[in-house]
Image (cartoon, rainbow, N blue to C red; front, side, top):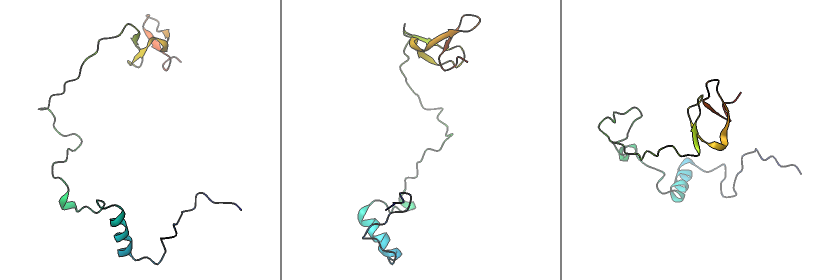
Length: 99
């Protein structure tokens, strides 16, 4: 017998005669925090493009390691094992940028 794995699956406890209220009650029992009012959501949500000019970010800067190079085409730092060629003026080129 062939089985259609793309067909929607239904469990035995779910029947097509369930009302909307019964389904919502069942969802609330399984996931108590799922029903959240929009009024309860926090007001201070950071939006993309927000002004962060007064924030300070500190990141440790690691100097170039002896086994690394910067590709002349993609300007990414790679391990020496990725070095496969050079440009006409002698700059290193990584494996991904070599034509």
